[in-house]
Amino acid sequence: MADTALSDLLTSRPLHVIAVGKAAAGMAAAFVVVPHLSIRQALAIGTHKHEPMPPQMEWLASSHPLPDDRSEVAAERALAVVHGVHSGEVLLILLSGGASALMASPIDGMTLADKIGTTRIMMNAGAEIHALNTVRRHLSKVKGGRLAAACVGTTVTLAISDVVGDDLNAIGSGPGVPDPTTWQDAAVALERFGGAAHPDHVRALVRKGVTGEIADTPKPGHASLARATARVIGSRRDAMAGAEAAAAERGYHPIVVTDPVIGEARDAAPRWLEHVRTAAAAVGRPACVISSGETTVRVTGRGTGGRNLEFALAIAGLVSSMPETTAASSIGTDGIDGTAGVAGAIVDSTTMSRATAAGLETPSHYLAANDSFAFFASLDDVVRLGRTETNVGDLQVILIEQG
Image 1 (cartoon, rainbow, N blue to C red):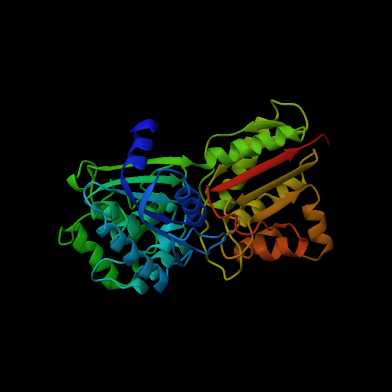
Image 2: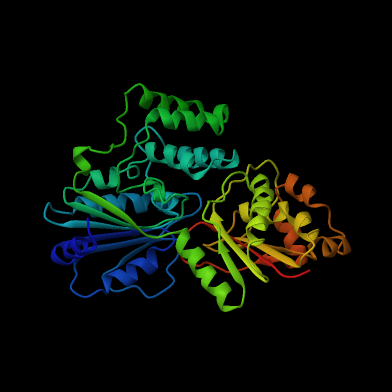
C-alpha cells in the first residue's frame, strides 16, 4: 500500500488504535493528536506512562522483559478492542519492541506461569529473538497474526523495529501479520533452547500443535488476514544514521558497517573489533566506526549483566592493547541492558590498567559469572541513559585517534 493510499485509509475511516511496546506512550500520544482522524477507541500498553496522555487514550501499564498478570489483562483488553471493530473500520496497531511481554495471553491449556517459565528457560539458554518469538507466537492468543485475524475490519500495523532484518513477524511477535513459522518450528526451537528443562506438559502441548490437534497461526494468504497490511517506520538503520551525523559534527571520519552484529556477545565482540579496525584503516583520524544488531548471552552464572556489557567486557583487553588511542562502546537503544539496569558500557585504552589498579579480577572471571556489571560499575564505565522509550536494537561505536 502506497503512502498516499495508507494516509487516505487512516483519515477516511473510523479508527480503533492499539499501541503496544516500549514506545507505546510516545507513539500513541503523537498519533491521536493528528488532525482529521476519527478515533473510536485508543488503547496504549507500555512499561510506564512518561508523558500526558490525551483524554481519549486508555493507558495500561504492563510488564517487561517477562510478562506478568498485567500482561494477560492487557492482551484480553486488546482483544476486546479488536472485537469492537466493524467491517468498514480500521484497526491500527502501533507496534514497538517489548510488545511480546507487554501483551501476553496464553492459548488454552497453558497458564501464564507456563509461558513465563518457557521464555525464561529459552532466554537463559541463549535463544535469539527469532527462536523466542517462534515459540511465543504459537503459545499466544494474540501473537503470530492472531490479533489481526480476530478483526473483521482492515488492520494496519506501523512498527518500530527492534530486530535484525526488520522482520515484521519478529517485532512484538507479529500480532498483525501472517506467521510463516509452524508448530514444528516451535518444537525445534523449544528443544534447542532448554530441551528437557521445559515442563513435560508444555512440551506435550507443542507436540499437539505439531500433530494438528491445535490450530496453527494464520499463514500468508490466509483469508483472515486478507485485509491486513504492515510496514516498518523506524529501525536500527535510523540509529546508525543519527550516530553517523553526530560523529561527523564532532570532527570524526565516520563509517557505517551495515552488516548486523549478531551471535553470542562474548564471541561476536572480538570478531567485530577485528572487522571495524579493518574498516577504520580506510579513513583518516580520528575515525568513528558505527554498527548495530543484537547479540545474545548464554546465562550460566549468577551475576548481573547483559549482552552489551558482556560484549564490551569481551574486548576490554584487546582495546587496551591497541597502539592507537581507542574507545569502544555497545549500548541498548532502549537504555536497559539485561539485568543491569544500564544501557551498556565503555572500554578504552586505559580500561585494563585502571582495572588492575582497582584490584579487579580478569575479564574472563566476570564473564564466567555473567557478572559484567560488577566489572564496569567498579570503574564507573557503565553507560546510564535511563529509559529512552523506544528500542531499535543495540548500537556499537568505536572511536580511534592517533597513537
